[in-house]
Every structure is written in structure tokens, then in C-alpha cells.
Image (cartoon, chains in turn red, blue):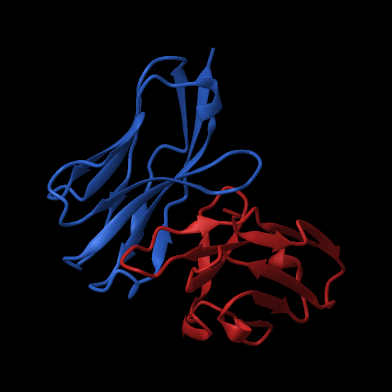
Length: 114
Length: 117
């Protein structure tokens, strides 16, 4: 069974530029999460989807971050414009949403903003 | 207040010995779940073990066991017979909410485990 796929793995951009990350969850997983992980810290939830509905986006900085999950499968997280403090690893995870919420993570996208 | 506290930034253990990684949590929910994840230097988070708040027995998965002490709000991870490949960052996480998908998960700041040959 294929795991959670994320691309790109690495991204370097200059501040004020836009950037987008893509995630394809495990087939059949209804719940999808985007996390931000700073160096030496645990992941922090940005947004959680149940199918195509964003059920928890309270931690998403909506002035510059946006996300979508069209058709309830893959998802895109966008930052526009990027700031220096956005440098971090962006993790995507999915879970079956059928009585268990064990999350399965992708390899992450490491963003560097110069 | 921190919902998940991992007080050990770094731990060392000799190969083949057991090690305990500490985790305490804070919640007023009666129904919650506790998780441990491993994050090697490659970066991918790997699920290790899960304990539900109503589970009466401690969870075990191979060499991993979770020492769940509900009254103390602690959920320590025990790794038996440590291997060099166990060297990684370990995160404790909690999911709150009555519905298993109602709440989001909160992660601790992790413990870096180094296994010495």
C-alpha cells in the first residue's frame, strides 16, 4: 500500500514569493491534516479536512495561508506571500476516519525562505 | 499550559538495554487517545503505539509498550532491547474529544534518543 505522498521534498524561495505544497493521502483515508514543524519542536496542526470539508482551520494564518482539498482526495497548501519565519517542514498526514485516528505521515516538505 | 510535556530533551541508552521516555498530558476530557511517534533523521513520522483512555491494559507493540498511568496523567513509552536503529526523535501526542475524530492531536516537543553501541 502506497504511503502519503508529498511534493516537493525541498523548496527554497525568496521572501514575498508564493509557494505551494501538494499532498496525496493514503487511498481511502477520509481525514487529511497539514502540520507545520519547526526545528526541534513537535508538529503543530494547521488544518484538518474530513473529506473535502475543512473541520479545523483555527491555527491556519488565513492572511497568507490557504488550503484546498478538492474532491476529498489530494490537497494543496499555499503560502502567499512567504515570510522568513515560514521556514519549516510542512507535514501532511492522513487517517482512515473509521473509528481510529492513527495518523500516517508523509515525508514532509522542507521550506527555506531567504 | 502545555497539553503534552516531554521533559527529557535527550536520552542515551546502551544497545540491548531498555529505556523509558516520559510523557505527561493535560486534559479535562474523559475520552482521549495517546500516541507515540518516531521521527528518524530522514524526517518521516512513524506511528509506534496507541493507548485509549478507556483501555484497561497497557498497549504493547513488539518492543514498544506504553506505561499508562491515568491518575498521574502520564503515558511513558518503554522500548525494550534497544537497537541502533532506534536512535531518533520520539514524540508523544494526544487526541481529545468524545468522537475519535472530533479532536485534533497535540504533540509534545519530543525526546531525542541516542542508542550507543
